[in-house]
Image 1 (cartoon, rainbow, N blue to C red):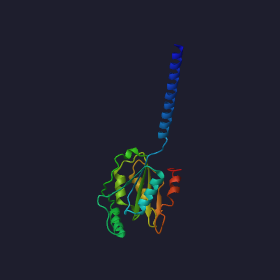
Image 2: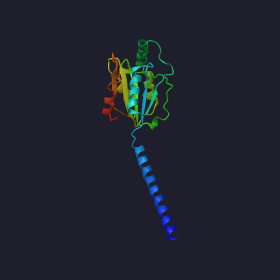
Image 3: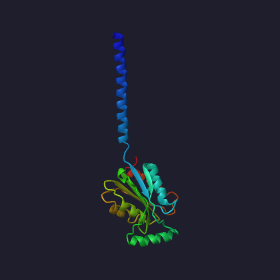
Image 4: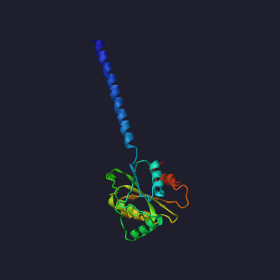
Length: 198
C-alpha cells in the first residue's frame, strides 16, 4: 500500500513538474509575441515596374519587415515620363485625387505606415494623395518617403501631415535618384535614425 502511495505521489510530482514547465513556456512565448514590436505597413506608388520609388519601398520592407502594398490607380498613367509629369502638374494644380483600386481593409491593425511617392512638380503623385485621404490613420506613426530627380522632396512631407489627420508624422526621406546607381543607399541609416530598426 505504501509503495502504491509512493508511486502515486511520484507520478503527481512528475505531472506537476511538466504542468509548471508548460505554463512557464507559454508565458515566455506570449511575452515574446508581445515584444515583437510594432506592425509595419509599407505602401507606395511607382510609375514603372522598375521605378525608383518601388526600389526604395522594397528596401524599407526588407529592413523593417511587415507588409507591403502597391497603390494602383484605376486608370494607370500612360505615355512617356515627361507626359505623365505634365499631366500630374495639371492634376496637382487642382488638388486632384486619382481614383485608386487599392484599399487596405485592416489599416487599423498597423502601428507604423510608410507612404512612398515620386515627387511630381514638387508634390506627391495624385494616387498617393487619394490613398491618404481614403484611409483612417489616426493614432498611427506615418512615415513619408519619396524619390526625386534632383529637386528635393518638395511639399511631400507637408502634404502627408495635412492628409494623415490625427497621425504622428515621423521624419521622412527624400531620395535623390538623378544619375544614381544606388537609390536606396541612405535608407538603412534613416531607418535607424527614426528608430524603426536597430
